Length: 60
Image (cartoon, rainbow, N blue to C red; front, side):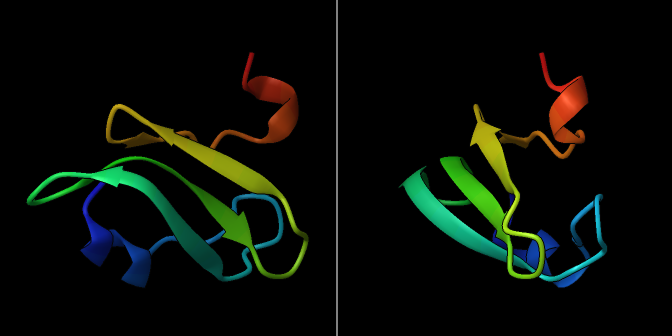
């Protein structure tokens, strides 16, 4: 995931702001990490540069 996407991303559940946590990154993208909503406290994983912004009940 490119870090500049943070300007337009919002929590799909409550539309709140997201906080990025980076576990691994390369020169251009976040490879693994998470996005956490500052309002509802839901966490969305980032795996293989792809943020999974599906609601929790639809992720599996």
